[in-house]
Image (cartoon, rainbow, N blue to C red; front, side, top):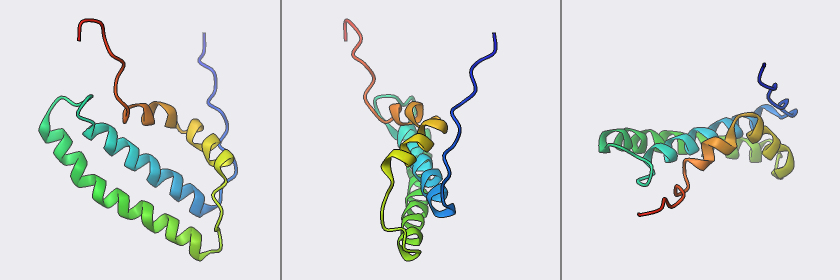
Length: 103
């Protein structure tokens, strides 16, 4: 049985696309840093170092949107884009894992 196709990506401006990409990059790094899910300090250190550059890129994407007159964030559309790009799984890595019995 073939897995279902991912949901289609909604139409985004180039700046919105960059915003979403940068946001997901930041989420990925935060997920790697998460002490409740990590396994070694070196990986977390490397992710923390990368986080700074990804955060700058995110800031720049938002600044570009603002400069171009894109002053509103269309949450529904951007949420659909995040879901289409596996944002739910990626953002789950930032949260605490469920409590396991005996811990």
